[in-house]
Length: 357
Image (cartoon, rainbow, N blue to C red; front, side):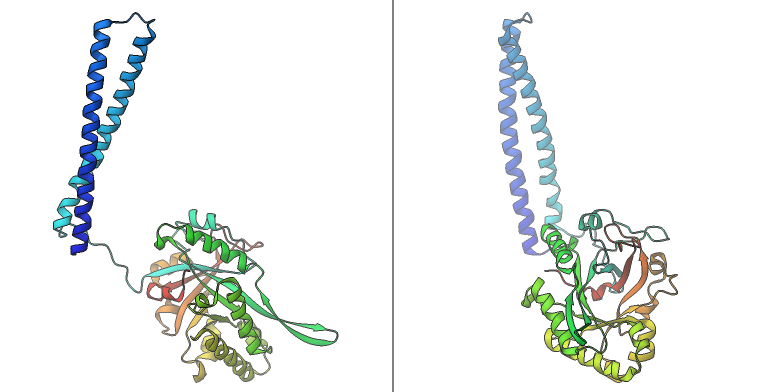
């Protein structure tokens, strides 16, 4: 045990001894009072009508209760005094704290304005979460919020690009931040990250700017730079593209613009098939990490992940986050329509992908 720890234990023991002495003096004084009042009552007697005598009985009862309370304190404080001493001198008897493997899994959810968000229910009712399988584990170690997206409109016959905030991002983040600030134990805080929904064929620099400005407006610049940015490119958009090469060129520009803003490469969210068929075949994207949506034809359950681990994480060094189901049942979340939530898993060593303020 370190000198600092031994000193702390010694100070606790001194404090405990002081409390024992205070309790002892108070009990002795109260016992004397009780004996004196009892003797007076025995000498003078009472007939059941003398208010003075009844007051003595009340006094006696109060003193007895006080004595019981102090004896309880004495027992508790005495325990405090005795217990720390062996460990202050010797740590060989202390049980070792189990260490979680770096590959141990941590679970979290992602959400946008399509989801409900009741932080109280999420924090109190999800010691274990349920899917079609039995309850398995805690799904609230991190939350990934959609922060922004891009939209094109036709206005007076002309196309107008418009950057949008997710309409619930500021509200939902405020709820999470308030919860974290109220946590006495930092280990109970919920980590978070954010993402921007990329839309092809729109100005890539403006999309990066919109993502950055959205976060700065809700957080503040210094904290935004601590974030790991994430860009979401949907497989559906890739499939619809008539020129996949140009689409990837534009998306790379957006990734580079985001990296310049944040000072770090963004994670890329997309489907497992998009990573296999497009990104891993393009050497320009080999230095990126991925958040992969892979549902096993919607048959992967939390139970599967717990028992067998995530093959998507285990078999791919470029994959940081695995979104393994769209059908999670997590209290306090769920889309307004389906009442279901995306659930994600990461290796514990990658929890630093997410932050708390």
